[in-house]
Structure formats: structure tokens, C-alpha cells
Amino acid sequence: MISSMLQYIQKSPDCFHAVENLRQRLLSEGYTQLTAGEWTLIPGGKYFVTKNGSSLMAFRVPQDRPTGFALTASHSDSPCFRLRDHAELTGEFVRLSAERYGGMINDCWLDRPLSVAGRVLVRRKNGLDMRLVDMKKDMALIPRVAIHLNRDGNNGTKYNPAQDLVALYAGGEQKGSFDREIAAAAGCQPEDIVARDLFLYNNQPGTVWGPAGEFLSAPRLDDLACVFACTQGFLTAHETTAIPVLCVFDNEEIGSETKQGAMSTFLADALRRINGSLGFDDESYHRALAASMLVSCDNAHAVHPNHAEKCDARNQVVLNGGIVIKEAANQHYCTDAFSRAVFQAICDDADVPTQAFANKSDMAGGSTLGNLSNMQASMHAVDVGLPQLAMHSSYETGGVRDVMYAIRALTAF
Image 1 (cartoon, rainbow, N blue to C red):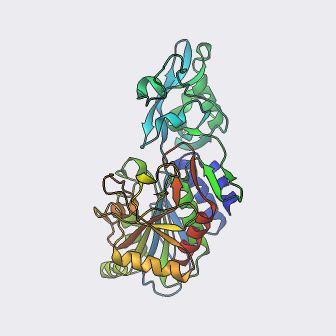
Image 2: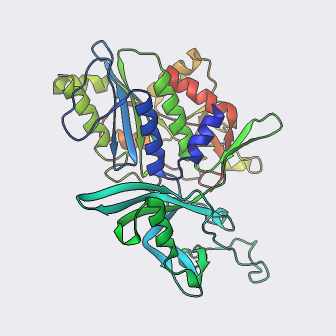
Image 3: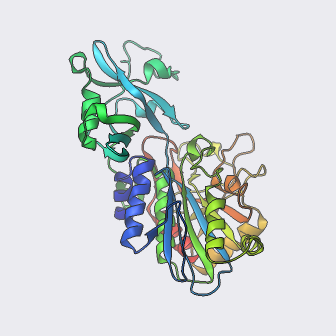
């Protein structure tokens, strides 16, 4: 199972590939892709819909009259560098102009070979064609200034993104070669590309390590590890009278305020369409929401082996200690006593260990999907995740057993 997760992460260097790989898996499992047209749903049917190619929602219709929804939510995006549409900076070298996407840790991207992936929009005779590209090779590198030229390099360097975080791509004589490489990967000519969403990514494969194989490290564990665990739970769960829903949103790392993010109407629109397509009225929809629950899945900070003081003394979580239930007084995590009790009971019945996480009181915490999704479709919700180290690094670390615990817990949910 761990090797399957690492393979999924390696094949998903960006949000578009993450969703496309899910789409292909759902099709292989007999799911029908819905479009913006009329939805015709039948009892026992299996369906999914995508948004922007970077968000996805899948669900199954029970044989009996549905009583509500059982939802998980995770996100397809990770901090990285988003290349500008006109990326080449020419001169003595060819460099690639990019913007930082999300709350990344800058220096872990330096002196590391990077690849390029994303989507391009290609002009055709009858319109536009969206094509995914993944170069799958080392193409660029952001070089660090040598210690001899920056004597304070070990004293907390402050990086200027426009100068210090620009990737080297080629020698100056290779002007135009980046566009040609991308076009060749997309199977078209450079002049046929109308627009593109491309990202620099760490191409280093994930690995399992430790004397007992207890740790795993990979790019994009936040949040593709949760995407994988949610998908496994969704596909293998026993049927009930609830409608199981798998939600994968884009743009969590930049606030979710997009048409395909958790704050959009994507979730509420899909749930309403499911309800209406099954012949139920608006009153039935509100009753269904009242009987529903969302498990928002996004990773949590494990206690750092060298910096235990960064964590709350009674709410430290450890690698391989179990799935994490997260809470915050400001409700940036949506967990409350009721949702915690329900999820805890589910984990107890499934023999899954749990851990409690809360930010240290003198540190500002982040937010995630649960409370944002609830703005559009109000229901009981809990925030959970896998404990990990180095969140938002280009290479993150988690526990092998925690992945299995999460799959078991989400299957039981």
C-alpha cells in the first residue's frame, strides 16, 4: 500500500496530474464521469465530476433511499514555483521566471534539480485542447550563492524571490528552447500553445527508510498522502444508506478562494444536484445535510525531534502514533466536541489509535478545508490528518504506520 501511495505521488507532480490520476482510477473502477449537462443518477450508480481539471468530487448512490452524505475532503495542490506564461529570462544564461505558490520553505528548493509539469492549452481547428505535460527529468536548478561570497549564509539568509529564487535552465545560446521542449512534450508546435499552467517540482522519488522501515519521505505529502488515504477509504468502504462523497479541492495552499477551491460553490452545487437528480426536493436536501458529516483531511505537525518546544506540551503528536484530530479555538479547524466524539468512536471501533493536536498558544495556526467548506454546505465536520515533519518543504517526512491507520479510519467512517 505504501509503494502504491508513493507511486501516486510520483505520478502527480501538480494538481492537474493528481486529479487526472484519480480520474483514471475511478474510470477503471467503473465510475461514470458527469459533465455540466443533465445528471441522470440511478440507485447503485457510481459517479464523479471534475472542476478546472484540478478538483474532483466522486460519489456512490445507495440502493435504498439515502439518509445523508458521508464526505471526506483533501487537496490536490502543494507549495511550489508557478512558472509565468512567458517564462524565459535571457542573457548570458536562460533562466525561468516563476512566482512562489503557497507558503513554501524557500531554501529547501535551492541546489536541487527540478522538473516541470502542468497543463497547456493548444489551439486546434475547432477550438482548444487541454494537454497535460510532465517532463519527468531534471530541467532546472536554483543555485545557492557560495559561502565564500555570502559569509552570513548560515546566519539566516533572507531571499529576494525576484533575484535569489530564479531557476537556471540553459546556456544563453539556448534561447527559445524551453518553449520548444514544452511543445514537444505536448505534441504540438510552440506557436500552437495559447496558454499554460506550469510548475517547477521536485522530481526526487519518495522513499521508505529507518531501521524498521518506519518512516517515509517524499515531495507533496501535504496533501497527496491524505488524497490517497481518502481515496482508498472511499473505494473500499462497505455500503450504508449514506451517500459516500470523495472531495479533492485545489488551491488550499493559497486560501481556497477560487472556483475550484473549498470556498467555492463546487461542493454545495454538487450535493444539490445529487439530491435533485434523485428526485428529492429542497427540504430533503436540508434534512440530508443535517444528517451528514465531513472529515476534512490535511496533515498535522508532528513534534520535531530537535524542537519539542515548538509544540503544546499536552497536544504533541508523533510519527506513527495514529491519525491526528485537530482543534483550534478560532475554528480554523472545524472540530468541536460533537464531531470529535463521533470520529473518536469510529476510530475506537476500528482499532485505530488517535492523537490530539492543537497549536501552541503563542503561535498562530493555519487553516484548512473543513471550516471553509462549511461556509457553503453546513454540516457536522472534523479536521484530521497524518502527522508529518517539515510541512511545506520540497521533501517531507511522515510515518508508514500512520498512512495505514488513516486508510483504516477513513474506510470505517
